[in-house]
Image (cartoon, helix red, strand yellow):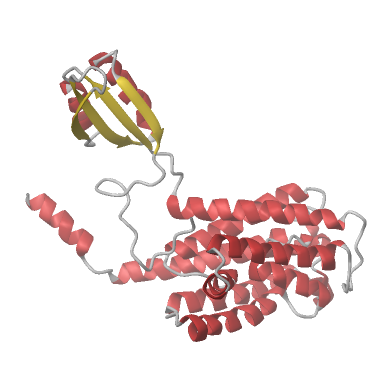
Length: 336
């Protein structure tokens, strides 16, 4: 009993000074990883992964003297202001810092990895770090690596209760004033940015840089990067989501299975008294959630307890409660 009380006090205790430092360090780390994904793998190859920085990459092709991160400021600051004025949103210090820190790191990192101002304006991958990271012949690889880094960085930022601003605010505005579902609104924003990139980068309309006949194919890499980013962010926030839900229905006594669940798995389950619709005989229905690694052991124990038991194994999309995740608070960000 004393152990349980101590655990409860620890869980309910306010965040410590160390927790504060860890959280802020996570935001800085996430912004840095996100910026690195753009600087090393996305910006030099004119891949447009939607959102604010995708639009910034396109605008940089029109105005090479202005860096991608600076365009990020031009988008983020007005969008953050709009969210306060039109949505009445209360922006936390973490979101403001993350939204302003990311473009700063991106600009600083770009200035360090390109040797001259001309190279910085052209974002030529052959000049990036002296050409040692030139992946012009491996666009699929650079697309996936860059998108993965962006997804990891964004996921770390969100896990620390912040966002980097951007197209999410546009999505919320479209949802409120145009009555468009948030997910569809984000899709519309990303699609608009990719089409903008196709016109400017793919077809060279208004761009100062020369484009070759295959530049329009970059739009397909952009779509791949958008998909990878969304999946990686979801994974960073919610995990793999590979828990399994098991129903066991049997007419026999399943004490051995109960013991296995409680002692060997160190889990619990719910016993539901039921009856067969056809036979009318009383049955026991056992309801439990386990990790995907534990499914094989549970099925083996079920066969030992009752080979004729009726068993259903299905995916558990999200699992909350004791021994699993805590239910999210109202202000927590959920990617799906």
